[in-house]
Amino acid sequence: MLQAVLNAFKIPDLRKKILYTLAMLIIFRFIASIPIPNVDRNALRDFIDNNQLLGMLNLFSGSGLRNFSIAALGVYPYITASIIMQLMTPIIPRLNELSMEGQQGRNKINQYTHWLTVPLALLQGYGQALLFSRQSSPSGGTLIAHFGLFNRDTVLPTIAILLSMVAGTMLLTWMGELITENGVGNGVSIIIFGGIVASLPGAVVNLLSGSSFATNVIGTIFFLAIGLITVVGIVLINEGHRRIPVHHAKRVRSGKVYGGTTTHIPLKVNSAGMIPLIFAVSIMVFPGMIANIFESSSRPWLHDIARAIRLWFSPNSVPYNVLYFLMVVGFTFFYTMVIFQQQRIPENLQRQGAFVPGVRPGKQTAIYLQRVLTRITLVGALFLGVVAIMPFIAARITGVQTLLLSATSLLIVVGVAIDTMRQLEAQLMMRNYEGFIK
Image 1 (cartoon, rainbow, N blue to C red):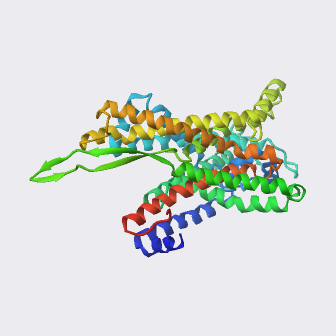
Image 2: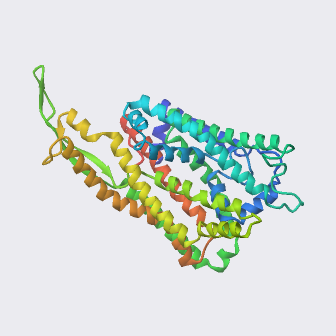
Image 3: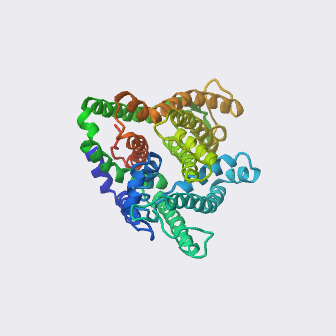
């Protein structure tokens, strides 16, 4: 692998892509440190450290929420907008037509996604800031001072805070697209990857210095062993695929014979990668966030309902993890089928004069491939769902809670790392170099 890294840096354009990606991640870390005014940060850090849901949001924002920087929302409003657009594309005829118009149509859908990101970021930013503005500070005030849209004295500071948070989200989204275009890997995933990796060292230090490590050494070691096995399982499932044989018919053009060869279509066990996990987390955090806002209500019935929802959607609760499992499985199937439809494999095979042995070209080939893909995706979806809740199961077995959120984020880190390495592998193989994966 070291030789593969050296080979990658020997290629000027590939070296430029890698350095460009690293530079963007460094800029992202600087952006995550730019503060928003009127915030009691010390009290805010203590409040987030004692709230698991906010701890998860802080983890994925690269500690941007803990510092309440302009990157406090991360790229999750954009991910939520992407989910909504993908759900609406098969339903709305105009969006369905755009999805079939090639790159130009996809660019238009991407533009709509950016427009939808702005109001979602405003809504999420207002919810977070409102939650913090209702929490008392040790200094006698609130975590966020001078916040409120319905007070003449606070409306301008509130608008400034919200615009700063929306601008930070759109800036990170733009940087992610620049990474996708000029760097290595999926840009938005790389941004999330950078935020999680930046938070992992602190989580490890907390584990080693915490009381749970000293009192439950065997449980901690067992927990880490389960995490290692989980990571190995992710790699195996992500690399697993079924080969569908494809025969190319012989064609004679200008006296030359073309085709007559047999290749294969590699249908992956997990075609969706870590995207379903990211989608599921993005949706799962919203009920808890809304509940946190209304829990401070003076009305007892509203307070009780919000508290019940918050407890249900706590990351260490059974209902949360059951729903998390089901959503990961569902999103895996959904995203896999969306990718399969966009690739138009049966149509391309028929256009090239290729066919699957024993299967009629066209509609029958599409039915056959979809049936095979559904079967192997079932295995990948169930495995990914189990992997998603494995930290919760391991915490229940071992009694170690310290790395619950970090272990969940590690799944995204592994998936993004594999996807990025695969892209580097393809770049090296095109230039006749030995790649990372042997």
